[in-house]
Image (cartoon, rainbow, N blue to C red; front, side, top):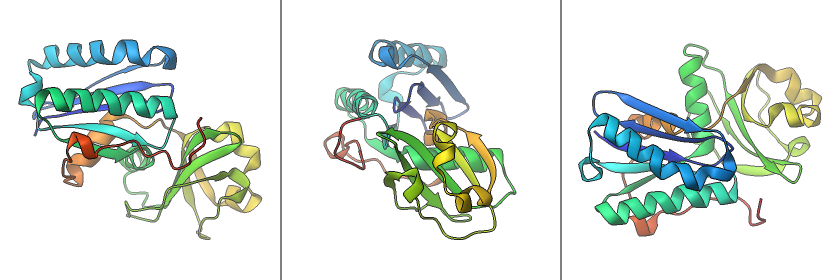
Length: 216
């Protein structure tokens, strides 16, 4: 399977290309230039792999939550390429992508994972993944209002952890066995899409998932 993945939901824009033989990746860390660099990054990766867009089986993109502007950039680029080359799209949750990265890094740990992303306005996007589970409700709350099951230990991972660490309740802090600063990445999304055998949808049916209505 050959897949292209795009994510611009945070300050780090990333792309990944699954060629059928290897996984190629690239990233850019200036959020103000995501729109300028994503297409050249994609072109460079495709040229290096010796592939053309019409050889792809689909395009994966980070559908949210995250920066509203960033989500729209990734979605619009993915949809534009999909329409131009008659490709299906595979939307992947950014919180799931973080959980995937955690479980790849900590294989054998089998601990629940709490994934978070800075939602600004003193809130965080978050999802709680029970042991060996990939389904989780995505929420946005002030950190102090997060409610998670009482487990003996959890892994806390994502973006904005240190910024809001003092806002976590003492109960939640005591459950954290490890804190990991992990951005959602295009590579994780492409791996999760392949692992879960996610089916492409039409470009017209693919949209960002904002979680809340207020612009960030």
